[in-house]
Image 1 (cartoon, rainbow, N blue to C red):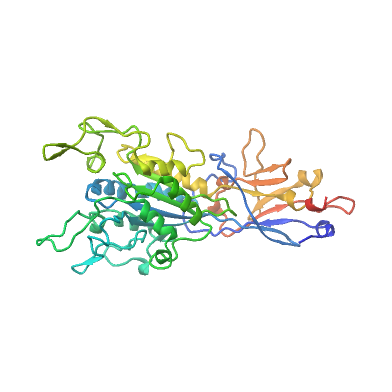
Image 2 (image 1 turned 90 degrees about the vertical axis):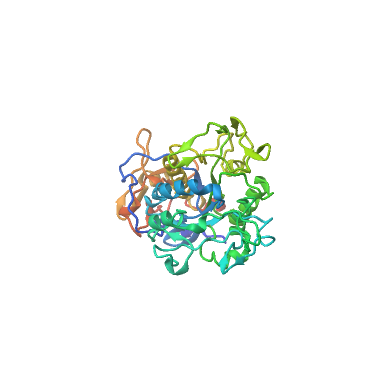
Length: 442
């Protein structure tokens, strides 16, 4: 719609940026604190214009899906995840503005489930549709949160995740491989672990999305997957196809949000065989299906084998989800890492930075601001004037004069101090002799 130039002649523009804030403690730097690691930049869409200014939508929601290999060899790795999951989620909870959903699902085996392994046997559920979030239970074993299958930033997420991801407290996390026989009438467990199948099922299967996973996936929210396995993916789907389907299902052109994948597994360069890294709670070895040799009728591990550059499809998928794919992706954690908790926390930091990208307000797209106005421009939050960044003094916002863009450095703001407040960008109204025509009328 063409807007007359007179519309802008006496406007005191205020840009309101609403945030949905949650009740978690923040340790972000205060208004006068040092700058955080520069996040990636993202132009925010203008959702509304009026005589009072511009309203810009800010979306800091994150939906996190953890996909866990539930085969018998994963017990120690699941324990390690349970003991350190708080390190990961605490990084997100530090920032009050981040609204997260976290749920988990388990591996699938298309060759057995529905073919050899019945969905139910002996009154017990053996498997669900791939991508179905697992029911979260409380300390008594009953469904937590009225049956909702994911935690939010408002829940007791640390306790719920720690206990539900611990195989000692949640025996359903381990599926022993059992063939059907006279002694065992119920076949159970996966033989070929598929992680790509449940990952895709969670985002593009309408039966799952609108059924047990209802409410988990929010359109437009950043989508993050964390894959945990001591095996290679055996779904038969290439990482390239997975990233394409993920981007179609959860990526949005309007917000430029791409899905992000993090992998906890055997990364390139990891040595295994007769001498392997160890966790405090057990030996760290790949799944027996990773690389097998036969000595008579006895399975043996190869001597001093090294994981090759492209041996693990889970690592390749994580690499493809980065902005700049490299041979050493920063979103891959060795499942044998002695600093596992610290590395898992770094995943949380990366996701936090991704969710709180710079807020870019394109003033130049709506009005021409005079030099006098630029000198008087202020950015406020809750009545406080935010600190402008200048050479040698990082602050909370920058004015890109050449492109007529205001950049709010969201990570440098302590959102815990300003619940439900709005950012305001003020500049002096133009006089009658000043040109303030919109860009499209110049």
